[in-house]
Length: 44
Length: 160
Image (tube, rainbow over all chains, first blue to last red):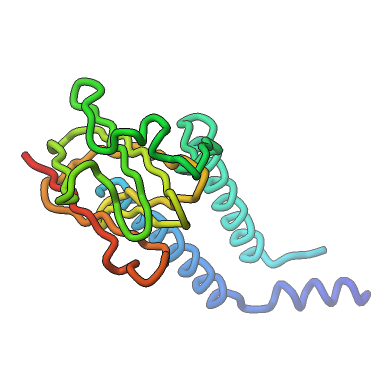
């Protein structure tokens, strides 16, 4: 097995589910904050 | 370069979010014409009160339910055209606020509304706002301008 192939296999094997959920959670928080500020702007 | 599937998803998500926000800013500026309150309209700060519209500060009706509110600002006073420093505005009226300062930088905020801008010597700041809610609002300076900064207020009464 070449070195490159081995690296690729290792990369796919990493379990990133927790990271994925955290990143999406952060993204959702940023979008929710933005929407909140915008709603406040429209109401006032 | 090989990337994890999840990595591709969140990079796409991040890029799309950035793109959407940039488009929103672009539409706001170029299509809806939103400008900063002081958009390079200048005057001579040495004799503000001799120049239109600052010769006559106060609220003036300029159309159907449309008003111009001219305010001359100086340390530590908002000249709204009367000594009580009270402006009465009918609820639902669209008001074009026009203001400038005769001395240092002042803030111009009507607390609880979107009216919030900076007044700089030599520049005329304008902002259009529709008063949707009735009540008593405080117009205040939110840029530190000197020892009387905290006393620098006026009152906006929005009446039914």
